[in-house]
Image (cartoon, rainbow, N blue to C red; front, side):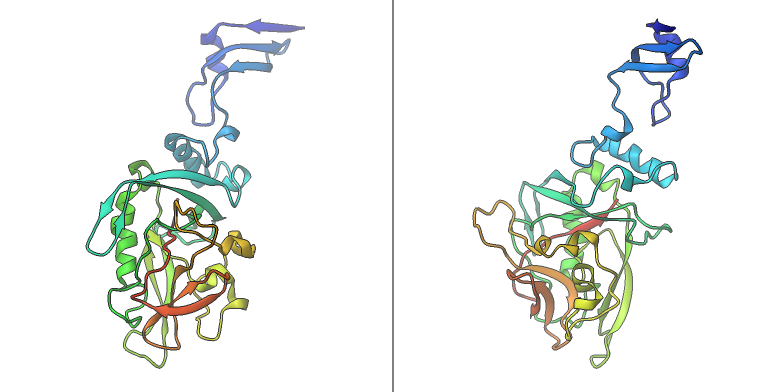
Length: 286
């Protein structure tokens, strides 16, 4: 025997949605023991909240559940999921961001260490590059490393401000490790500092096994998205060309004091002068 109930007051005493709010349902079937067997509702279930299409409010609630230990975000989203995000026009002394739409792709889960303890739930990165290329520095040097580079300032100020406010509020600053000289040009040392927005390191793209002789191991670990070599291919945003472009990494090229690593059109890493213009593909954690 089953019973059909349309009294929303009674129904709402039973059903709670994943956010801890009363769930608005139109009707429900219950069996003889009062256990619901079918619910008619327009309320979105937790499994319907995707990185691609969820509102920022829904995504925020889902992340809250993850950080509270009530769910594992990896059960709901996948590496490679992408979301279109509109950037606001920003002009500073060295870089320009126009009003453009970029794809932010999930490159891993629970990978980066948050400055607040534990690991950030999700690491996302631009699938391609900004429309305009950029320089790592406005002088031909890498002795300052990533942490004192012009590019790092741009990532954590102008680019950060170009993101939608709702997304800015979700970002979790994380610790990033990168080699720099710090006054000792013969023996670069690992430096770890917090970043809200950052470029990837050579290791984070290629893994320790494929770091070249002029590179530096220890700058994090490989993101799962880059287990597939084809994911290293990037183009300038809005490009109509069928070719791929090179894009900067934050790792210094230790063969000289002038260059940083970039990934070329052939998906291989090599060094280039810090003042040259190459693609900029920025990552962050939420």
